[in-house]
Image (cartoon, rainbow, N blue to C red; front, side, top):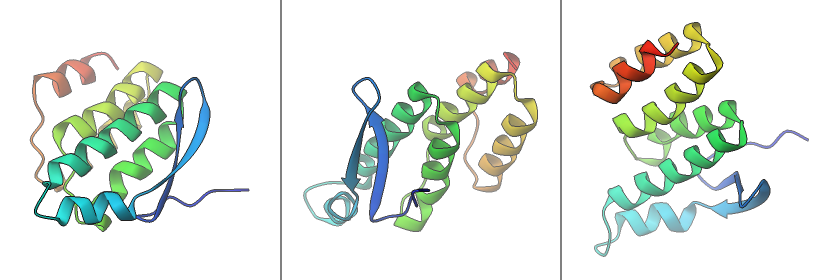
Length: 121
């Protein structure tokens, strides 16, 4: 059964591959509260993307990355670099280039890590 990734529920791999279902409703509402900034939610998304990359589920990580905006969050250069690094490790230049284009379209500026990662492809 294919799982849908959206702003309400995210499946991610943690602790050696065990799947946990995380509700993002609280995460998004927490980010919009006076107690926290959207940086907290972006950091949480980056953590989930990182876990997907570690488990080898690049597609799920990229889906999380691209769905951040639907939840009112702006992916950072770190968010993009996490996925780019996985494509570089696989030697998938076409996917890495497409993701870089996507990054630039969203006005996210590449940094030294981005360029070093692309040199590995």
